[in-house]
Length: 78
Image (tube, rainbow, N blue to C red):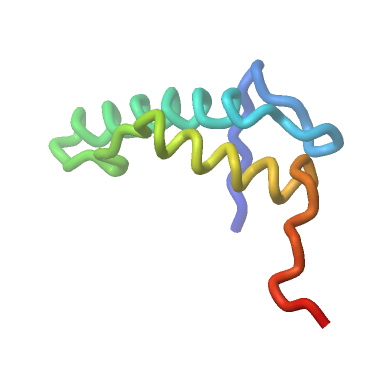
């Protein structure tokens, strides 16, 4: 089962979506989702805040996955 969440700020997979757009869309979604849960008397589904250090780490991973960083040096030299 897959869920597709569309946001006007996000582009299709063909071009990589900037990580800031993804994280901003996620925070908007989590606020709405938590509000829905609260309206039903439930606990927050995502009771976390993405701090700047977490956003920076996620940005690094996003860029590494999409080949936007220089290749990492070999760990073992032959």
